[in-house]
Image (cartoon, one colour):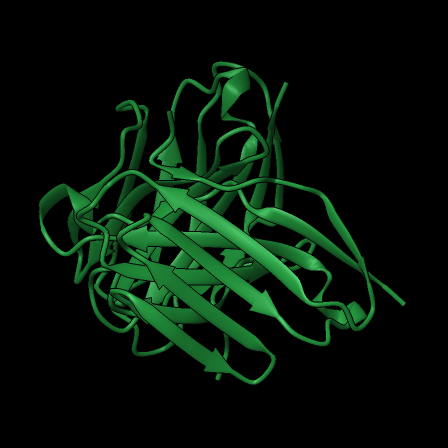
Length: 113
Length: 115
């Protein structure tokens, strides 16, 4: 079993839909949670960063972390065709071997006009 | 400000050969991390360098090695290439060490194909 599980999709939604992307993890030492977006033929770029549990909102994007369930989510409101990309979750702990970033496989999202 | 640059962008090699990939970080960034990305395994951490010292290493065989120069530029080398080494190799730079706390900025990657 991988330390971080993420459904690779693909996910296809109409423009304007609310998108929900999720990752589960097994390592309770993880405290730092990130969502990256990767467009085709580009490197990933940081979208959202959350420390420990809770919600964080940035424009149309909301990141949620539930450490008790070992579950993180990214919500995209009013999705746009420009949101079509692969979304990767990543997480790390603060000590020793847990300081390495562990990544999900990524979920491919297509937003159709 | 220029982003992270990686050279070459595409590379085709045959089994048994060796390859060197180069990464120039964003000016002022002292940390460089390398990742391998494949469809089946996703992004996997190779190693991180900070001020010319390897700070962390992933679970890859010794055929994978790297180094960082005094100007923060980094190279990674893969010797005795295997078919399974075909992947996108990504370099990321950050101001400080430790990717969990410092935002990483990625380059476009080097696409390596091993025949």
